Image (cartoon, rainbow, N blue to C red):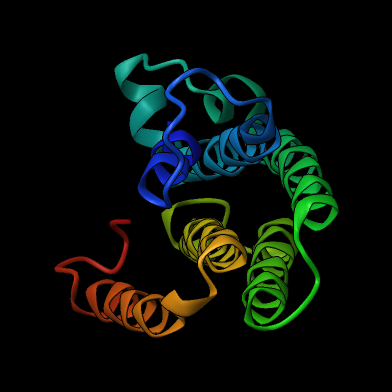
Length: 168
């Protein structure tokens, strides 16, 4: 729904499904799916004990990361095929892509396959999600650049001030 809401907020008045929104909806789906599946890494032991059958509990850390790689690849391919490659959206897109790729890489290299090893990959998926979506917003509303910078700064401040560094 995020792209549909964005479409309507940015001046789209046609409430019928607009086929132009479909790639952005798919992109959002894969970005969020990657965040969720990687996010489950922080709770593997607790989920196993309580019988909660998450992807990492059933398939393990490594297969979860590989699934995340697939979701991240689809997300980034769609993103770069749809983005209008000029200006500030490209900078947000590059930053988001680097953050997502580095998070996936660090998840593969994690020495501790638990809550501690999961925090950077989880933060990377959520940061990447935000950065790529801000790039999309700027593609359609380039005059909103100051708002996106403020929003992202507040997002990082909120992450910094959270009560537990392992909660995202």
